[in-house]
Amino acid sequence: MLSLDDVHGVVAELAPACAGSFIQKIQQPTPDTIILSLRRPGRSLSLLLSAHSQHGRLHVVQTKIASSPEPPSFCQYLRAHVSGAKIHRLAETPNDRIVWFELHKKETTLFLVLALTGRSANVFVLDSQTMVLRSLKPSRQSVGQPFGLSSFPCATASDQAMVPISDDVEDRGFPVSQRIEEAYVTSQRNTFVEHQRLQQATRLRKHVKKLQRRITGLTQDLEKVRAYREYGRYGELLKSHVSAMRKGHNQITVVDYFDERLPELTLLLDPEKTGPANLDDYFKKHGKFIGAQKNLVPRLEQAKTDLVKLQKELQELESGKTTDISGQPSEPLMSPTLPQDTRRSRIKTPTAIPYRRFYSQDGHAILVGKTAKDNDAVTFKVSKADDLWLHARGTPGSHVIVELDKKQQVPPETLKDAATLALFYSDVRKSGKGDVIYTLRKHVRKPKGAKPGSVTVTQEKTVWVKIEQTRLDRLKQSNG
Image 1 (cartoon, rainbow, N blue to C red):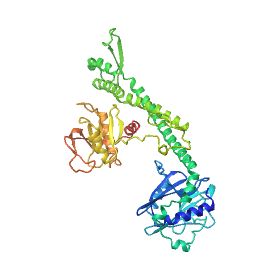
Image 2 (cartoon, one colour):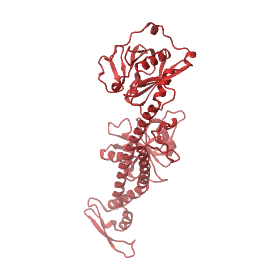
Image 3 (cartoon, rainbow, N blue to C red):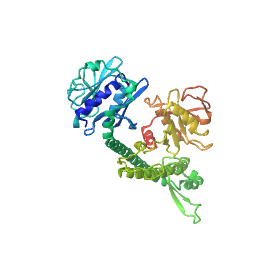
Image 4 (cartoon, rainbow, N blue to C red):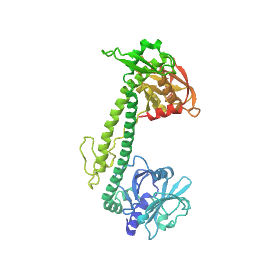
């Protein structure tokens, strides 16, 4: 924590350099640290405000520090209310380690206060009446109450006459800031890297749990359809007995001509259905098995591969090491000689795909565009000419694609599943019912100069859909 002399020295050094500058960028690389990027014509400056209980400080930061992937709530608040503000004055509370930034933004005056007070060190945002609006960390200074640590220091004659620092003076550097930064550089690096390591480990644990749930779900789905392995053969055997199958029959005995021993098989029937309907059921169930082998098995194998990789990365993170792109272990994360580029996240952020992927009851992949631009991508870049294209009639919504083989007919249940998703991801989802148009993708065109997501459709058909919660829940569970 800075001494009173250090606080006085760094404020005296920074005050003229900050006056007249605008806050251009705000970062929060660690829970205790705020970075303010200041800008005035031709000059820029970055300040580090740390409210760490042991290493709290204020100084110019010379090296760039990467931001957290997801800005914390306090950083988001500062960006919304302080970004773009002009620093009118930088001052300190006499005989106390409290630094005040007086900010002007349009017609509003705000104060950003850094309290270097040991365990209670904090950063506050105050309104023009010095009422607390927000704090970096939980504090006894309640929101909506007057700030009680100190009053805003009155302007001195030197403050009132203060003008922005000239370029030749600024070129001489900031010796007090430099001394403070050098004193804390090792702890700063270690604190930041440790924070990044913990964040990465947390994200990896979430991904691991998600993959484990996905593997469990896919395994259960495969177990359900495994019983349908021989249903294609059973269906072929039943073809010659359709006339003998009538409503009320719950089973039938046939000769298995596919076995050279010609054994008899007893096949179960649905007594509520006719012979053709029972025959159709056998082929549908076998279709589910085929679809699962085509779609679920590769997904399961990929999920298992990804799980092994993530578990290895997590183990390396928990042991204080990461693995670079070449697969070779890097230096321990807590090394004081850590290279600058290792501050960046080692977790590769996958390129965002333009669609959500679901699977129909028959095992067909269904792609649903996320945004208007994504709709164009999924329709004209991802899908094939013979895929099925769907969209809620007469309302904004997602483009929906059913992946089909060439000249393959879409199964009725798959059509209902895809139409349900098209309706659910449209502006009429609250009504729960409506018309959905569908056609082959090759009959969908993009007019020249049309807005993202706008298309023309020919040879379309219409299906009326009512969203069934059980169907929707099943589809959501297949999302992957």
